[in-house]
Length: 378
Image 1: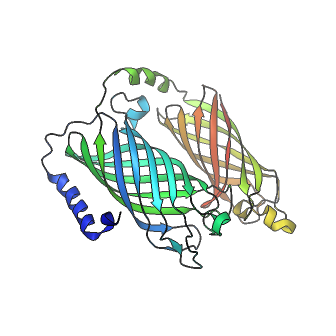
Image 2 (image 1 turned 60 degrees about the vertical axis):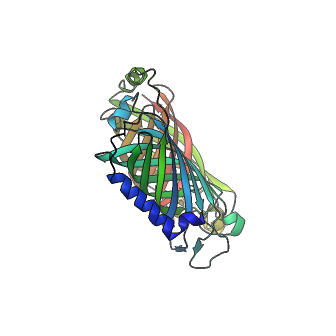
Image 3 (image 1 turned 90 degrees about the vertical axis):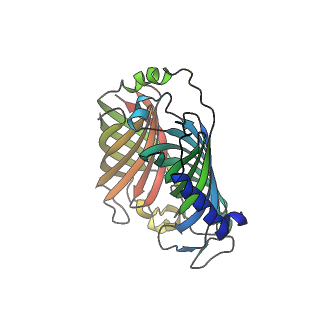
């Protein structure tokens, strides 16, 4: 790894990449097989919520297996020009990272993340492409508040998201080089607190190797897309979920149940718009006499219920939908002045009337809780 980080080798890697963009690539053919990508990474910056300033540099790598989708694209894949579905393993060495104020030796352990993601071409000039690659998954953090009292990470297991922009250029018919920028976020969504979360922006230079493709069952994608085009324009949802928020500096939790009722309008195969009412029931309310046991930061409530109305888009990928909404509280007897909120989540249709759902509630940039449950659609 030292040789990779040396200035001479880094200059050589960059020079090879820039040269590859301009070389004659007539041997290049349209890649239609699956591929393996390996990308060493260096850190540009690290930051967390609130006033936790960080210093030091992290380094790591990603290994990505791209499942090609251009041979047999389904309707939603065609609509977003999807190139591949990705399985991603991400590693970050955090041994050199510390807080500026009150640092702790070995404060942040290494992180290991697994993602499912997409690769979507945004621009192509000659043989060179610019790709956008969002991904979601889980990350394991080596150190937490409960192991060394660092105030940023509350649990070993975290939810994680990653977004990358990458330039890709071919060298041969089955080999490409790539360079990009990405940002990685992981936190536990309030399951245990403190939970400020970690954000890491990185640069990468790597290589992609394509395997031989198979052209069998070329009509499968079109046949399966019949289901995707058979959607209803107008539907109504009724959802319920349950989750918990952590007690400050404790492994205990405070449970909540969320309810949602709303209307959906599908604009096309992949885009929808929905609006509805969120109601959250508190199994434990805020009690000033028991501040540490009942305090929930921006989500602290003196009453059992809070109610809000929200609107936002849905992105459909077959049976899976990704949702985001911005809402305004109709009723919330909160400890802090909170008038608005965010929700985001996913739902997966089991059939035409029942779906599995996950949903996070957010105040400003602070996670309240993640709920898991069911969504009924009519």
